[in-house]
Image (spheres, rainbow, N blue to C red):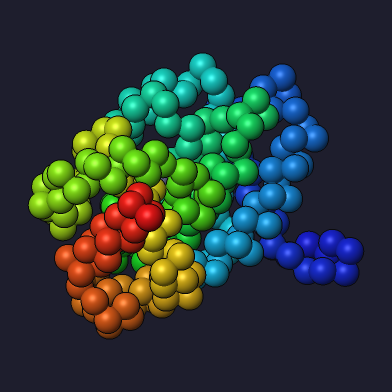
Length: 233
Ligand SMILES: [Zn+2]
């Protein structure tokens, strides 16, 4: 569907509500703001991943959030998640970071929609870019640096085996820091090329080598050296 909006033809945002729309939970003006922001986010995120159309977003009523998260086996602090290109929003206008959450999920949805069944992007990589594009990558560089120096082989093994996020707190710090390093070092276009390459090659390592001209251990060492420079200069 395409709507004439001030002369610009744009695709409509698919906003849905589960089990139904409730004005007390999602004020109409805010929902309109969300709809507009989806278009803005689409433009930002399309620098990082191919996007074929706006993803559907489903707002889940507060009383259903616990059972929704249990069903998909996610912790209760999660404010949104994406499955098969559909964004499930468990937040409302009280969440001051809702735009950042949309950008984060827009990236996941874009990757999902583009790669489909070939979505073999490692979780650590997918999350690291999502945190960066959602502008949520601030970490305690000092304590992270000490941790990484002391446990470098372990950390690097977690990344290679894609286990990093099972290590609750430190896992997220590592992923956020990796995202900042990758995005600032290689830029959005390389990440987009890598995802396009994934569709052809299907293997992350092959695609990484082709586009970034490095392997995972070299990338991880580059990240560590960069972190050391930040902490010790
Ligand atoms: Zn995520």
